[in-house]
Image (cartoon, rainbow, N blue to C red):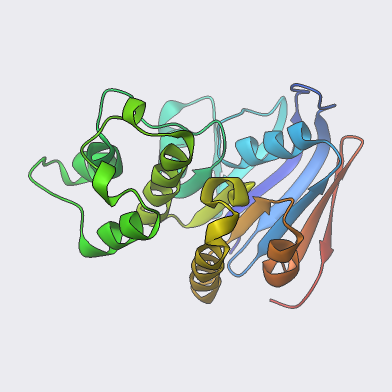
Amino acid sequence: MNMIEISDYALPAIGSGVGLSGVYLALGHGDVYAIDSRNADDAHTLLRALATLIRPLTGVYRFKGRTHDLRKYGDMLCCKRLIGYVAPDAALISNLNVRQNLLLQRYYYENRLDIDLDASVLSLCDDFGIADKLDQRPAGLNAMEIQAAIIIRELTKRPEILLLDQPENFIGHAKFDLMVEIFNQLIDDRLPIVFLSHDKRLVRRFANKKILITNGTLTTVILKPT
C-alpha cells in the first residue's frame, strides 16, 4: 500500500517557480526519493503539497489508500500528524519553550501536561547541542539551534513519512556523520522519505529513486532496488 499517492495534481507557481501540472507520485515503504530540480521553489512546492500545506488547483490526494479532501481541516490534520516535515518554513511556537514545543503533540494526544521528554529525545537534544536550551523560548536560540529543535520535534513524533528540504542546512556540515546515522536508521525502518539536498553525498548514499522536475512536469527514475 502506498503511504501517499497524488494524481492529476496541479500546483501553483510560487516565487521563481513555474508551478507543476499533471503530477502523479506514489510514495511507499522503503522509497527514498531525492528531488532533482533546477528551480528550488518548484521542489519546495512539491514538498509542501505532500505535507498537505498547499492544496492543489486540481488533483486527488490519497493517504494510506484513503482519498482525503484537503479543504476539510479534519482530513488535513489526520494526515499532517503522521508526516514529518523539516524545511526552512517550519517553525517553533514562539510563546512556548523548546521542551514544550517538543512535547506539544504528546500533550494533545495524551491529554495530560505532567509528562516530560523521554531518554531518547534527550539524547537527540544532546547530539544536536541544544540540551541546555530546553527551557528557553525560541527567541533565545540561534538559527541553527531552532532548526535542530524542529528536526528533533519531527523525528520524535514518530512520523510515517518524512519530508526534508536541504537537511544539510539544518544539521550543518560539521554534523554530517549524525545525519548519516539518522538516515541509516530511518532507511532500516523502511520509512518513506522525500528530500531535496544539494549535498551529493546524501543523494548518492541514500536515494533509491529520483524525482525530476523540469519545466513544470515531474518524472521519476529508479536508481537502485528497494
